[in-house]
Length: 363
Image (cartoon, rainbow, N blue to C red):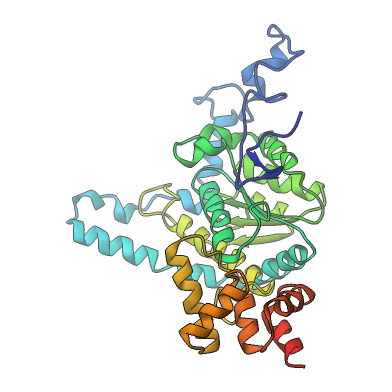
């Protein structure tokens, strides 16, 4: 049986799904004895039997663990924020958000190292896979889904997997985050291998689905990155590259979609964007691999060619027509003074890097 997922033309699309009733994942599994206590739902609960009042039980340990996380800390100075005027709450929130870039800056060396390692794998044909649950998982899927229109990547080249599958993108599926085995199944469904990269994203740094994804990926030989918003996290410890952007307690206690989510988005922006720069997907700061799939992007394509070449509108239209609307090729025909087929050959020989192709065209 193929791994769970949404597939199109034989390739995984942006979202891989986790089906709790798939083989090995639920009470409908063949060969399970409903009368066997070892096959009960409680035995599959990573936190053990439900006993929230037992201080030394699984939930007691979890409460104690959450008490150590800065993202879960209580801000007593904000305990009466609901009494403030709306404008004042907005000012407080804006001030909190302003601290996030500084926290990200403290991790730039680690972020850069992770990006260089990622670009190296992807240059050899590897894929970038984001894995997470809840807000973190949605941010990974969002970043992955933006890569095809921005950098003309194949939909299978940058992928997001989220605990709970596509439904978790629009409605809460927090229970799915406790299943590390589902993360392994999602990655196996992608056919993950040693050439790939998995970036696990979790504000707490302890989410079982995310930590499980990184641990499974590492066992398969893939490069792993762990992005957390707490120091000393299991996620960072499990990964080849640990990134811990500590943003502190949230305005609303435990709502890690706020500062932690903002920090995660900033780091994911860096990972995908700088990796694509390293792969030659831009020319300077121009997105020369843009996929012109609508009128706005077609207009942007013409503008990019204009900014890169300074050519007249007539010449730009002619170059785009001669290259099938490919921005990178059109720029090369103008600046390199070559025809369309030659531009295509030079770009193919240069691995799609426009600067390298231009140097070859100019001799």
